Amino acid sequence: MQLRLCVQSFLDGSTACHVKTLGNWGNRGQPPEPELTRLLAVYLEKDVVTDGATLRPYVTALREMAEAGTSDAQLAGYLKHVEQEVGRPQETGRVRQLAAIALWHIGALCNHSGRKLGYAAHDGQL
Image 1: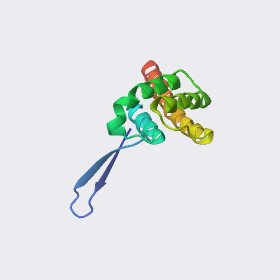
Image 2: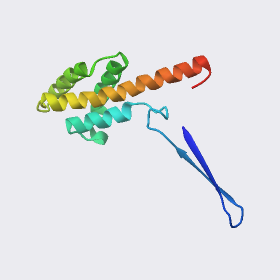
Image 3: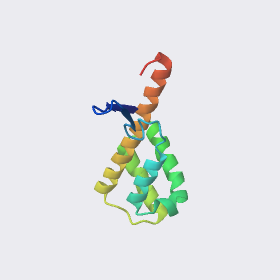
């Protein structure tokens, strides 16, 4: 969504317009992978740039799980599996659950945006 703000000068009558993109990545139609990768990297104490390729399969799995309607509790179970695979010491259940909730919300936003776009294409309106 874009906001266009135009202001007319009282001195010379000239008009200046500014366009600003509003909303978050989901509202702008951007994919969730960068956000999922960033959050997973922070959780696993990895670097997004140097470990991005290593995290990609996990990010893909997380997105697919979220799109399939997986619960945050199931995502937390998957995070425990990821911790073991990357050789990271297991996190406490509470911290893992918080990370899973955050990942779940990214996936839920992706699902909501997809349904919204689907309805818009079907009904011809937003």
